[in-house]
Structure formats: structure tokens, C-alpha cells
Image (cartoon, rainbow, N blue to C red; front, top):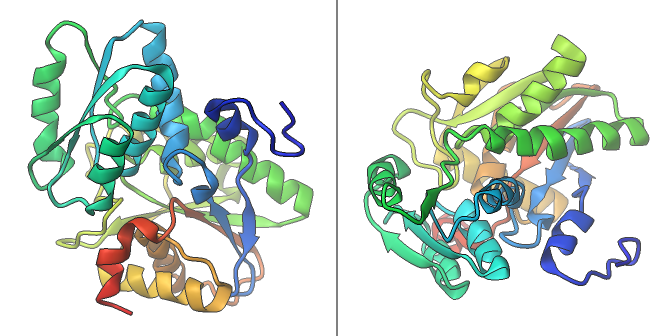
Length: 296
């Protein structure tokens, strides 16, 4: 209805009508900006974009029952879309995922199966189930629609926001999980700007577990689609320190993957850089209270 006054007649209008998500200047460096993806309304995360594009593709195939493996936010977004469109959804979630995620998926009406310690453990189960008739595996880890969701939306928003605000964008720092938003943003800017814009990916350090992201491997299909200039390793403790710093200097409560981008920014020694850095903040802190409680 009225995007200007934020009046919408359904949740899809709401999601798309709230784009672009805000770009906020942070008090953690000379010229640092955050793309606040927790303003997406379904999962309060960047995964609303991924889920919407995957879901629309599935609807074209007249699917009756969706199935996916996810550690968190994608599952919530897909659960919400399944409720909106009245499509069955079975979601496989690692038993190590923060407790809020399966609760929220069940609240939205999805069938939740908790097993294994990572999504890698769950993918064979998902593929086996999807081999039966009537099931559609969305396959966020290999479906290039994941990348294109961020090429078409997130990246274009960042470019337009920086241009309109006179921000001299030099680099973007984003975490890797499926690597969908990292690669979608990189692909867009590398095609348009070449090496004028530096793209930095953030990994959990070897042996570290940071909810919401995972360490990318050389065989990651998406990473082969474009150039990533650097990959920076961070620990869970460093990510939590990033969460605390943004909370105490900018008053914004961010999630652990967002904290990891702050940690990477600090490791690169960019605090005094006069050119702008944009950090992608995928979600907020509220689903990670148990994980954060022991560090405050």
C-alpha cells in the first residue's frame, strides 16, 4: 500500500517495502558503516532475502513440501514464508544450533528435526528425503539463486546508499556461511568497479564455532563465481568482543556474525582509514542470549 508511511497489506509487501535496510555510521572507527540486515522482518536477518528468492523459485515448480538443512536464520525465514503460502516445510537443524532457532521454526508451524553437529552432517538426510516424490530441496549451499538474491538486492542497495549519501566506499566486509551474501555482493561490485572496491570475507578460525557462519573450503561452489580479496579468520571470543564494542559505543545489539565483521575490521588495522568501510551485520543479538550471557 503506502511504502512511504510503512503501511502494508501482507508480509511480502512488508519485507520488500522495507528495503533498503538502513546503513548506519558506527562509533568504532573513522569512517565505518553498518548495513543493518536485522531490519528484515521475517527472521530479523539477511536470510530473508535468500529465503524469498529460493522460495519464489520453488513456487514456480508448484512444490508441495519443502525441505532444507540450516543452522538458523534461513530456517526461520523459510518457515515464515511456508506459513504465508501454506506450504509444508521440513527443516533439519544441527543439535548444536542456538536453542532459539528450532523454537521459532516450530512456532511458525514447520516440522523440525534436530540431529548432527553441523549442516554438513544433515545434507545426506535432506537429500535422501528429497528423493521421494513431492519434496523439493531448496539447496541453499549450491543453488546460485542464493548468490543472485544479494547481487540483485543487498549489493545494489549498498551502492545506491553510498552514492546518495556521498560515502566514498572503499571496502565491504562480510561473513561466510553458505557464502551467498559475501559472493553476491562481491560479484556485483567486482563486475561494476573491479578492484576499486575491496571485498573481505570473514571465517571462523580453525577449530572455532561461531553460530551463523562457518569456515569456507576451497571447493565452495559460490567462491568460484567471483574474486574475494581477503579471507580473515576470527575466533568466537573476538566476535563477542566485536558485539560488545558496538553495543557500548554505538548502542546497537548485533549478532555473533556481525561481531565477527567488527573483529576482522580491527584485525586489518583500518580504524583510522578515511575511506569508508561497510560491515554487513546479518542479524541482531537476541537469538544468542545463552551464548552471550557468559561473556558479559
